[in-house]
Image 1: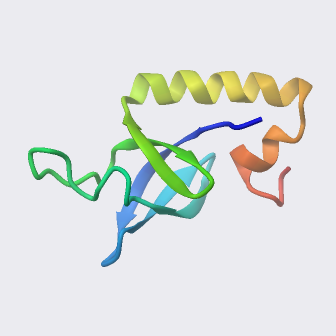
Image 2: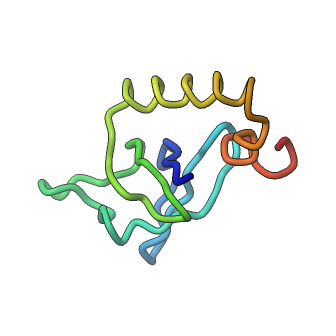
Length: 92
Protein backbone atom coordinates (compact mmCIF):
# COMPACT_ATOMS: atom_id res chain seq x y z
CA UNK A 1 0.00 0.00 0.00
CA UNK A 2 1.26 3.49 -0.84
CA UNK A 3 0.19 6.24 1.47
CA UNK A 4 0.82 9.97 1.67
CA UNK A 5 1.13 11.61 5.08
CA UNK A 6 0.41 15.32 5.65
CA UNK A 7 3.09 17.36 7.38
CA UNK A 8 3.65 21.03 8.10
CA UNK A 9 6.89 22.68 6.99
CA UNK A 10 8.58 24.09 10.09
CA UNK A 11 12.04 24.97 8.78
CA UNK A 12 13.69 25.46 5.40
CA UNK A 13 17.37 24.61 4.91
CA UNK A 14 19.97 25.86 2.43
CA UNK A 15 19.35 22.79 0.30
CA UNK A 16 16.03 21.47 -0.98
CA UNK A 17 15.44 19.76 2.36
CA UNK A 18 13.03 21.03 4.98
CA UNK A 19 12.08 20.06 8.51
CA UNK A 20 8.46 18.92 8.43
CA UNK A 21 6.40 18.08 11.50
CA UNK A 22 4.30 14.94 11.23
CA UNK A 23 2.35 13.90 14.32
CA UNK A 24 4.67 15.87 16.58
CA UNK A 25 7.82 14.31 15.05
CA UNK A 26 10.18 16.48 12.98
CA UNK A 27 11.54 14.80 9.85
CA UNK A 28 13.72 15.80 6.93
CA UNK A 29 11.71 15.97 3.71
CA UNK A 30 12.90 16.73 0.19
CA UNK A 31 11.07 19.68 -1.43
CA UNK A 32 12.46 19.19 -4.94
CA UNK A 33 9.03 18.32 -6.39
CA UNK A 34 7.17 21.30 -4.86
CA UNK A 35 9.97 23.84 -4.45
CA UNK A 36 10.88 26.03 -1.49
CA UNK A 37 8.73 28.86 -2.88
CA UNK A 38 5.32 28.98 -4.53
CA UNK A 39 4.63 30.40 -7.99
CA UNK A 40 4.47 33.94 -6.51
CA UNK A 41 7.84 33.56 -4.81
CA UNK A 42 6.39 33.15 -1.31
CA UNK A 43 8.17 30.81 1.07
CA UNK A 44 6.60 27.41 1.74
CA UNK A 45 7.41 27.80 5.46
CA UNK A 46 4.23 26.97 7.42
CA UNK A 47 2.53 25.26 4.48
CA UNK A 48 1.20 21.71 4.53
CA UNK A 49 2.57 19.11 2.14
CA UNK A 50 1.66 15.53 1.34
CA UNK A 51 4.71 13.32 1.92
CA UNK A 52 5.58 9.93 0.46
CA UNK A 53 8.93 8.17 1.00
CA UNK A 54 10.66 11.34 2.15
CA UNK A 55 9.48 13.60 -0.67
CA UNK A 56 6.85 16.34 -0.57
CA UNK A 57 4.62 15.26 -3.45
CA UNK A 58 2.19 18.19 -3.36
CA UNK A 59 1.10 21.19 -1.35
CA UNK A 60 -2.28 20.80 0.35
CA UNK A 61 -4.47 23.15 2.33
CA UNK A 62 -4.72 22.91 6.10
CA UNK A 63 -8.25 21.50 6.17
CA UNK A 64 -7.36 18.69 3.79
CA UNK A 65 -4.27 17.95 5.92
CA UNK A 66 -6.28 17.83 9.15
CA UNK A 67 -8.99 15.66 7.58
CA UNK A 68 -6.38 13.24 6.27
CA UNK A 69 -4.60 13.09 9.63
CA UNK A 70 -7.92 12.35 11.36
CA UNK A 71 -8.63 9.53 8.89
CA UNK A 72 -5.15 8.09 9.44
CA UNK A 73 -5.61 8.25 13.20
CA UNK A 74 -8.88 6.32 12.83
CA UNK A 75 -7.08 3.84 10.60
CA UNK A 76 -4.41 3.44 13.31
CA UNK A 77 -7.11 2.12 15.66
CA UNK A 78 -7.53 -0.94 13.43
CA UNK A 79 -4.08 -1.08 11.78
CA UNK A 80 -1.32 -0.31 14.32
CA UNK A 81 1.38 -0.19 11.63
CA UNK A 82 0.03 3.23 10.60
CA UNK A 83 1.40 4.55 13.90
CA UNK A 84 4.96 4.36 12.62
CA UNK A 85 4.01 6.75 9.80
CA UNK A 86 2.12 9.14 12.03
CA UNK A 87 4.16 9.16 15.21
CA UNK A 88 7.61 7.82 14.34
CA UNK A 89 9.08 4.39 14.90
CA UNK A 90 9.31 4.76 18.67
CA UNK A 91 5.50 4.98 18.99
CA UNK A 92 4.61 2.59 16.14
